[in-house]
Amino acid sequence: MPVVISSIAHFVPPDIFTNAYFEDKIDTNDEWIQTRTGIKERRFQVSGELSDMLLPAVEQCLNERGIGPEEIDCVIVATITPDNSFPSASATLQHKAGMTNAWGYDLSAACSGFLYALMSGVGLIDSGTCKKVLVCGGDKMSSILNFNDRTTCILFGDGCGVALLEKTDDASVGIQDSILKMDGNGGQYLYMSDHGDGAKAPFEDYPDEIKQQYVIQDGQSVFKSAVVGMADVSAEIMERNNLTSQDISWLVPHQANLRIIDATARRMGLDSSKVIVNIDKFGNTTAGTIPICLSELHHQGKLNYGDKVILASFGAGFTWGSILLTWGIKK
Ligand code: UT7
Image (cartoon, rainbow, N blue to C red; front, side, top):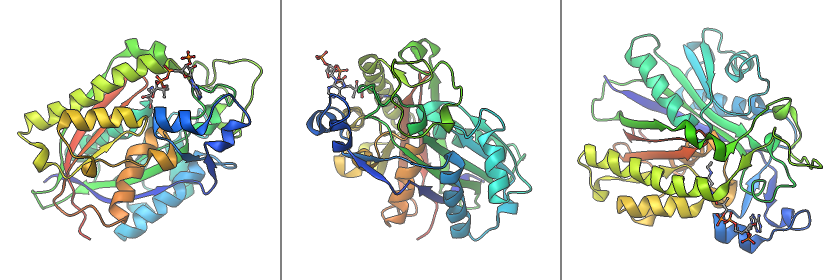
């Protein structure tokens, strides 16, 4: 019996910050940001923490499946911005959402966190350890951004998504294949050394100097690896499952840069109409991008039962990967 995503939801904070917001604060402009990244605006959580974003997404996800929080066996939170270094984001969320029978853990894989967590959840169900696993991905990136650093602060946003995993007796749907990769040599190009109180910080922070407890990125180096890495795994998962671009209904890529997304779609031979892009609205929400995209697609009624979907990510670590699934929620 395959493991399927049986419900999905997302949450983004209500406060919208357009590119113009940065123009009078740092040396940047809307034209540069849109041309180089595809971003027009993003959401920042002006008060509250990661768990405050995750909670409404969890509640919606469980409501739509028609089950209570006590039915969850395990909750995995993929994030690099937990409310606290410890207790874990999963423990905090377990308590807030009333998942009284769940154990759980956090998973740190930056932008690939949701894919890593999804496959961890599949493993727990396949092994018989759990029946219902809640897989969450999200970040409050505003808490670890240096708003003086124009090369990073314009890229990111806050938001999260939550997917419920369980078995289905329909063998034609579910999570079918995955390729997950890591190369720690990439750590020097995208990192944050010292978490400190990072996730407690307000969304705006203008330190006098660039400190290590903020996102530090060598954009070009990451860009070059991301273009190759995300395209490679996406093409590879198609090839080894004997799929052509005709067979794929949707590519749901990590939203770091529109140019990286376009390169991946080109390599897969996919028409842009099959590629999910919301970076213009939300920027890069790190572990949140892929579940937010999937949830939007589902709630817009565009995902059909039986659709073949490829999820693809690239991020800090480096970590990257792709997952092939057949959508299994009936409208
Ligand atoms: O999700 C995690 C994984 N992360 C990624 O996948 C991100 C990968 N990298 C990127 O998306 C791109 O490298 C960036 C969007 C970060 C940067 O775009 P780029 O085309 O690689 O620009 P660049 O770093 O080569 O910078 C070009 C110029 C530089 O000026 P000079 O040296 O040519 O005079 C930068 O200083 O643009 C300048 N610049 C800016 N100008 C206006 C850098 N940031 C800005 C800015 N506004 N915000």
